[in-house]
Length: 277
Ligand code: UTP
Image (cartoon, rainbow, N blue to C red; front, side):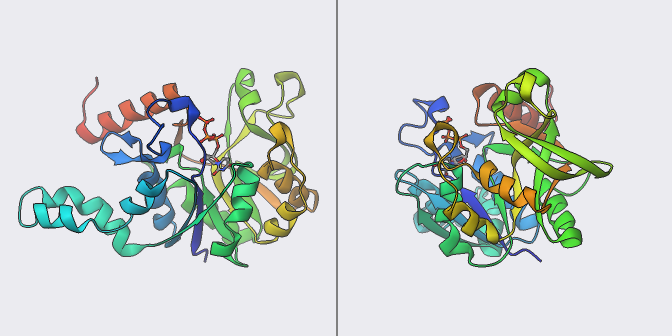
């Protein structure tokens, strides 16, 4: 059973400036809930009650969101507005929340290594909350990955088929199909040109990682863009046959981009309020 989930939330969110000048991208609301809460709810559904955040400067609102606000609670106590806090109260009551700061933004791989002190030597989930995933027909994506981990005991990445003209935005896998929707990863390429892409199976922001990833990351030199890439470290694990890719069930919205964020907002609004605007 995987108990911990790492949330790298230290990025600058420059694509949402000026909104993200003094507010974390992860606190942008999709209708009435901040992005990061959707992610935390998905992790908790998967049994990952310990949520570990790799934060940075200007991200204190995230820590406050997963804590009690005495003033607010006092103000609305006994009123009909109290129930509006139910979803976040449930999350706070079920989970524990720990934080560590990434002092310099040296890449996602570096952010994961920064989280080592919160994770220790156990397998863990890793969730990028700017990918919002929903699965109305069954369990969430993190639960789906955790089930694969329970069977195979190795790292697992969630993948999605994307149009060839979009592969340059993702890490892309090359692998051997083991069964419908499940692949043993042989190699992966970060942001390939369409001509060089080994497939159109793109890695999205849901992972299960085994703890040997930390030692690998320590020995991984900076790659594309001068940043330590998680894909490079996963590539080392893949060489030993210990990475699986799972074509998850459900939908994913790229809320790190403005069009994806708007799409997610419309989807959640229509689902919540049953309208078709
Ligand atoms: P992105 O590059 O998509 O996020 O990183 P960003 O930098 O916040 O966004 P833009 O491109 O400037 O708009 C993917 C994820 O990795 C985290 C980010 O917070 C995001 O969730 N990340 C990235 C870190 O935590 N630390 C890093 O050094 C880099």
